[in-house]
Length: 65
Image (cartoon, rainbow, N blue to C red; front, top):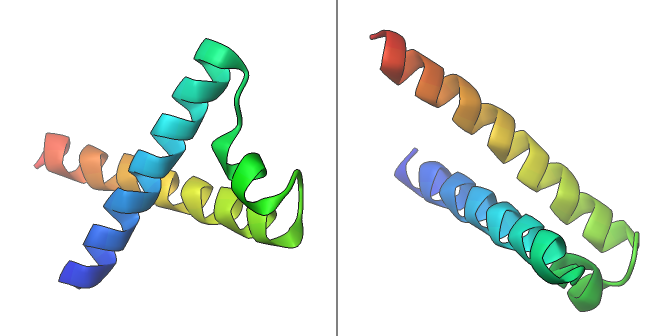
């Protein structure tokens, strides 16, 4: 479980950095590394999204506990 949490944290961080770059300079790091809307980049985007959803529910549980 510790490895999974670390991986999820990494994905949330990658997503945050990528969106920061997109907002600040219109530079999409994931698209640059894997190709614009390639199968690999779509997988990365999907994993980042799922990690973000997990993080939302994790934080919600910690706040209400």
